[in-house]
Length: 288
Ligand code: DHB
Ligand code: FE
Image (cartoon, rainbow, N blue to C red; front, side):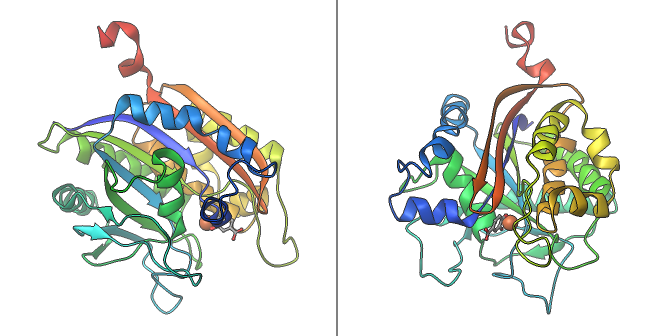
């Protein structure tokens, strides 16, 4: 059966991609941010996952407000990076893991989740940026992707607890998938930011740091919070953070944090990263 080897969390701020496109990686504004991801990239090189399940939200690039699925799952051979208005970006199209996508959709429906099924769809910075942050800019991606789109834009958005439950179904789907592939799950979005309204520019570094601790040690607390509490604590767009709960819900109760990084501000956002492994699988005795 397939195996879950880790859970990664990261922001997906679009200016990160713009900084890479413009060759600004090593400038004073960006170097500390990007250097913080080096241990995460090393983890990926060492563990060589075959499949990345990426949980993210579309930002009006693929879906618009006329049609908004609460949960959507990609089951395509290929996902092209969508042009967000600045022209095509120099990154390769993402390869799909079609058979797993269908298996996951089937497992979701059996568990009373009914997602939108997308056989043809493009992916925006919500998926592009996390992939570049962990895998760099390969000519061809060494990992297949399964995109999961969560609506955190158009109210009513789903409950954080529902995202957490979806993660448990994702784990069930991975462990019932007849394959020897190694899976990682990426929860993306956040951390605190608000791009519009009276609190535009709001960031909350204390809450971000607490989130990075709780996502590992106390995920039940984060899953029990209301949507309003997410908006209040992390900003209207910072509510994206509830998507990390899909990744966390797929992991064991006890995890080991391998790497963690926090940087503020990236654009107008508190930017964070975490790399976790299930404690039991990570223990030396289990590995021997
Ligand atoms: C911005 C956009 C995002 O989708 C996000 O998650 C963080 C920041 C931005 O436009 O600055
Ligand atoms: Fe976003």
